[in-house]
Length: 117
Length: 503
Image (cartoon, rainbow over all chains, first blue to last red):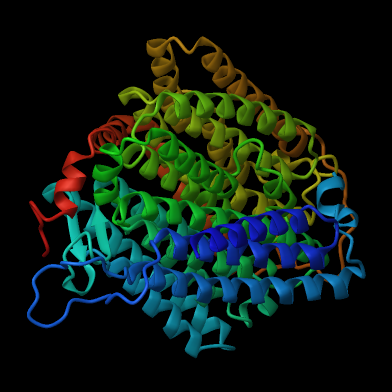
C-alpha cells in the first residue's frame, strides 16, 4: 500500500509540475490542483499507515500497548483539503475573469504588467 | 489572553460586514477599531516586556498536543508593528479609497488580513502557521483583485499562482516535519529535530521551507511575481502588502531557522549567496524602472536581501541587525507606498518622467516625504543607518567581506534610485499634465480626505524618526529579541509547560 501511495504521490507531483510549466492558464490551475492533492497524500502517508488499529485509547487504559492509528495527519489533511479547495476555487474564478477581460489563455501574452515601464 | 489581538480583529471584521454598503460608517469604525487594536497590541507588548514569554494552550490541551499560542518579544513586537501599519493604512484608505472598492467589502477583508498576520506572528504551531498563512493570502488575493482592472487581474494571476505553489511546498515541508518528529508544536519539533540522526533529511526539509518562504518573501530567484503585481492595486493595498506580507515570510524564516533548524552552516552559506544576489537584482531592477510603484517594488526586493543576509551570517550581531532592519523596514516601506499613493493623487500619474515640480508646489509635503525616502537609504541619523551598521559589523566579525561589499553596493544603489526620484519628481521643473476626466485629484478632495491622506504619512514618518533618533531603545529591543531567538531554551520551556504563565 505504501509503495502504491508513494508512486501516486510522485506521479501527482511530476504531473503537477509539468502542467505548471505549460503556457496555458487552464493547465496551470490543473497543475496546482495536482500538486495540492500530492501534498495532502504525502501528509497522509507520513502519518504511517496502519490497518485496523484504534486511534484513541479504550476506557480504562493509560497508555497504548499496541501500534495505534495516528489521527493527527487525517485532521491535518482534512484542514488542508478544505483550505486548498477554497483557494483553488478562487483561482478558478480568477482565471475565468482574466480570460474574459484579456481574451487569451496564453500565459506568454500576460506580460503587460512586466513590460510597460 | 494573548490571542486577544487576533480575536479583536476578527470581531472587527465581522462587525464591519454588517455595514456592507454604508461606506462612511465603515470608514469611521475601521479607524476606531484600528486604534483599539493598536492599544491592545501596546498593552500586550508591555505585558510581555515585563513578564517574559507568555503562552496560551487553546482548549487547555497541554502542549505539544494542542495548538499553542506563544507571545515572545519578537512576536509581540511584530504584532505591534503590524497594528501601527494597519492603523496608518486604515486611515489612508478612508481618505483615498474609491467608493466602488469600499462597497465590496474592502474594510472587512482588510481587518481579516491583519488578523491573519497577527495570528501568524503569535502561533507556536507549525500547521497553525500554515493556516494563518492561508488566511493572509486569501485576504490578500481579494484585496489585490478588488476593483477588477485589467492590470490588477493580470498581476493577481501571477501573485495567486506563485503563492499557491509556495503554500503547497510549505504543506509538503510540514508533512516531512510530522513524518520526522511526530509533532507539530514548534518547540517540541525543535527538541526532536536536534536529536535526530538523519541530518540529510532535516536539511532537505529546511530546503523546502526555504523555497516556500522564499517565494512568499520574494528572495532571488523567486521574486518575479512581486514587481509584476505590487504596483497594480491602489496604493493603500500595496502599502500593507509591502510593509507586512513579504515580511511575514521573513518572520517565518527567522522563526523556523533559528528555532527548528538552528544555525546549519550549509543553509547559512546558501542564504548569504541568495542575499547578495537578491540585493543586486532588486537594486538594479529599481534603477531601470520609471513607474514609482515598480521602483518601490524592486526596492522591497533589494532590502529583503539585507534581511536574509543577517539570517545567513547567523551570529548574535547579525540577527540583531536583521531584527532592527525588519522593524525599520516595515514602517518605512508602508510609508513609501503611501507616499507614492499621495503623489499619484496629486499628479494623476506615477511615471517619474512626467512628474516634476513637487518641491516648488508643495514644499512642506515634500520635506515630509523626504523622511521615508532618506530613511530607506540610511542617511545618518535616520532609521536605516543603524540597522546597516549592525549588519556590516556582523559581516566584519565573520569575515564575510564579499557580503559587506554587496550590502554597501545595495545601499549605494538605493541612494542612486532615491536621488533619481528626488531629482525627477521633486526638483525637476514640472510640466502641466493633461487632467484625466474621471480621476479625483488631491486638490479637488475635501479637507477631511486631504487630512486623512497626509496624517498617516506624518504618523509613520514620526515613528521612523523615533527609530532613528531613539535607536538606543530599538537596539535594546532587538537585542532582547535576538537573545531569545538565538537561545530558544526559554521559548521551549515556556511552551512545554515548565514555566507556563497564563493570565
